[in-house]
Image 1 (cartoon, one colour):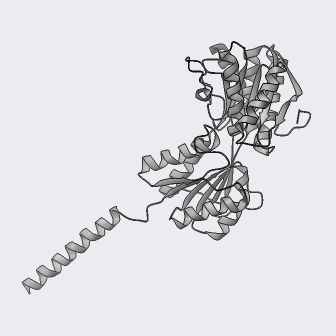
Image 2 (cartoon, helix red, strand yellow; image 1 turned 30 degrees about the horizontal axis):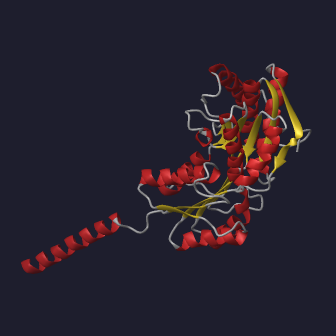
Image 3 (cartoon, one colour; image 1 turned 135 degrees about the vertical axis):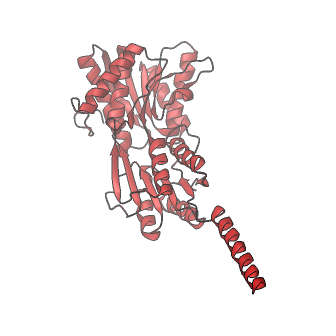
Length: 351
């Protein structure tokens, strides 16, 4: 009997150790994934910001993470990449961009255990139970960038280069115009906006086209260009950088993230006057953490702006004086309080 009890005890102990080991190496741990939009993971803009949020969550929580770059930008390309990640065991996937809308709509029906977020579309056709759709009030970020730009220039002319003519990019444009106009009307600036210098390139990944468009605008006398065009916008920034290095007093305004480093001229200075930012890294991080800790709340649309601290310009930029930064902060407070309203349409504005 004693021998039998000893054997049973050894078996029980062995099972306990095995179970503990299985728990520590469980394949059930959430895996965090992302599919890139057009462009690359190091675009220093929308893709990179989203990936940094996902990767930060994975590092802090000790989870596996990866991203896939689809073979193209069609719904089929995006859905294939989502499915590939799902087949590899990824149950949280971040999709940054308006172009994902149809792929996400299909994926949420195909995989009922997939937590998927789409950034920059409200999923008007219907949000699945495990889907979170996140949009920003880009018009508010653009507005503050417009105010800062006008205060920096005091007079002169500004332009805009967008990527695709989609709501998120349009709102940046419209907000920027309203910000410049607000500064002209209320803060003593005199900055012009010529409709010929407000254009959409049709691409987020054509660096050469961005540089070409910037060349034409700067040659026409534009002093600062707001580039809301991903990789195409980097072409605008490169042209501004080259011109400043040759002695011209021109600027670029970045987008999505603080692009000060993108405009680094190698001499400790940058051609980035400011950036119209939205917290793509923060929302990707927040949703990934929520998915991992059991607080993920799917089936909803979240809209974020200045009031939530998720849109605006960098708190500090060496190209802006403390006085300008303080004035912009005052305007941001007025937006947060509802005293200043930034319209999210192009009514009466340069399209």
